[in-house]
Length: 265
Image (tube, rainbow, N blue to C red; front, side, top):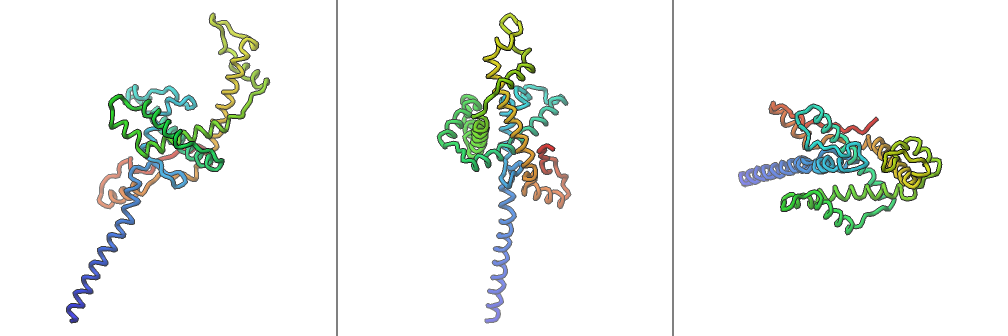
């Protein structure tokens, strides 16, 4: 009888140890696996590598970006100027994503909501603009939940910025001030410079558009500065893999280092 108890006790200890080991492994493994594709966090919310890659593609087509019309995809990748440009574009993409997350939170607070049907329509338009004809794999990726969340984030950001400027007006003095700076750009078909009166209609439209643009840039800069303490450029996956490589004498690649997230001064 004591022998049987001893065997049972030993068996119980082994099973309990295995269960405990499995539980601990799961506690460690789940956060590591979940953060494998995370680039950084904003207020604890993950921003995936997919979102960063998508923003790098989209930012050159955004007229409000300093990288508007930048075509790094057709530039020489070995050229130091191209590499510098690519690095700057990635930094700008990260910054825009940080701002968009902040704008999304502010939209929620203000009750600015984009309907699911509007998101559906935007996703379809996005797929049409980005997928090559017959590319079923690319189309499926663009319709994935992760890409949908990216498109929803962009759409919410746009809705917020539109609400920010929808009631904005421009005064006669502001139009004249705009003309004093940009009047040289207003000419007729023959290239002759227009007077203020001749260009007044276009000036009013352009002065208002510029005022809205400057407000949007100012708002983004404020959000970026505000969110600086809420950004974390490291992940559990990178932390664990760095530890693993160091333990076994493997050189830690740069890709596993915490992402340097520049949120401005």
